[in-house]
Length: 193
Image 1 (cartoon, helix red, strand yellow):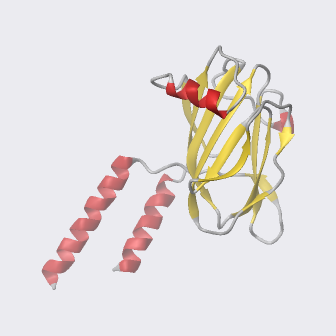
Image 2 (cartoon, one colour):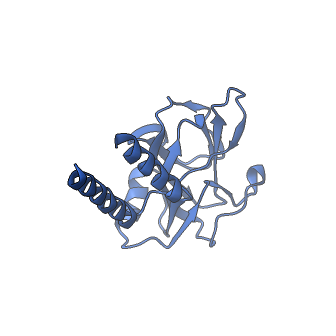
């Protein structure tokens, strides 16, 4: 029964693993650090734009051949991305960005640059294989053409790099429906015994 439940949870996660939720919060205020970026997010009731993407690979300056940010935006904005990263697929991440950002895996900060900057390379950020972990990113652009590129180093042993794939957070309704189904399975099994 335990194996069935684990397989069902994995299947549900795979069904929902299509894209990360990306929010853009436009502002007319100058941004210089994480605290100011969080103030922009907390001072609004909803993001200016929300969309889903299976990667975080955008550049208004076409860096690395990346497309511009969806929906257009002010020259100053905050972007958040929330989803899951499969650490069994990637052994490291690498970011190219201008201005500041912070990234957390499984609730632990793995990279932070808390200042404005020209295009910057984070270097390789390595991590252990712990399966599917939460991925949270906060990035800000302070006047100018924004660049935010996320690469993953494949764990395949080849050290090949690709645009990192970020999966979505399962919807609470789907999780509730799944839980109800599991309870029904357990109840039916107990009645048979």
